[in-house]
Image (tube, rainbow, N blue to C red; front, side, top):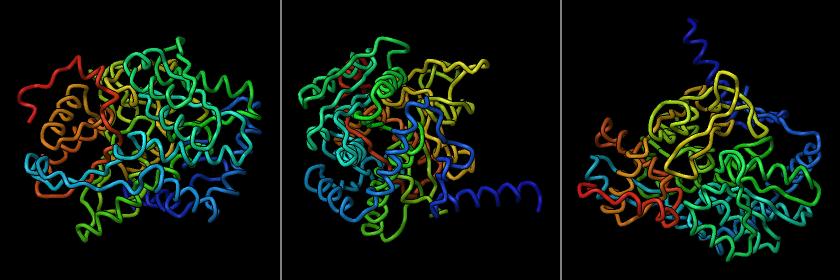
Length: 416
């Protein structure tokens, strides 16, 4: 075989390992990505979490209880909604997976509820969480209230300002919100502070990590809890259309909504998978949060993945109009999927995301989150090259939380 054929065969083997459950392996690796890079203090806590996952996560009783709570309290299954006006405008058939209609307004509740229930079974006395856009913080506060555990949420002070409605929601739901004034004062700093808290009390504290990042087993755990999005989407599109879509598109920051949606279609080679990162204001280091488009391998927050860092290995500050995508890393499973070419990762700029948000709102009567708007921008670009085809867009959250930011960017008259 020629070298290209050798690479294709290797990529096929890596995808097969992912699909049949060999990844993550015993070291927590997705191929060369993932693993654990943590202080010794946290190793026993991660071992307990792994043991709890092995014992409870796929046990029928736990799954029955989780499914009932997701149905009766969180509102699953979420609809797969046709978007005919966008479809006519773009020249394709558009379907929206409506995670914005889940309880608390985003996909984050799927993971938060599952982890909060697991924390209770592991004997935790308190739960800590981090948040950027605030949706994971709100979901964690709600889930902890549901299971009866106190919740402390760390949030960068910049994000507290631009996501003020979600700060108020977290407090109403009984959580303590701790603004983080160190570092970049956004999601990265919030994770740093949450990890410091966890190191100080790893026995009675449970860290409810919000995205598919961090040390093993978190990327696996978050993916398993978010995979309900992809399972539902695949079943729903087959029921409605009798066939699979041509493409599935989601926004990617840390990557939890995308990994959950993509997992329903990974084995379907004829379905294109596109992850859309925050292109911000340009391609320069510090001007975007497009990790897979501009980053290099390194270690951040306990995991080896693709990161945005300089030639000296120093993690760089990022930029995005969207608080939830403003992170200099990405989950290790996404790094694997990018390296083997199963998912194509592209960028959408701040302006493209704002324009796509206005178009969705004015044509479909749905206000998506700024994070989600990046997926719409990527889908519109895809549609221009694929007339007549079918796409599912992961509508990961609603845009109410973004009104303080959106009020500074009035809609353009030609947004339709």
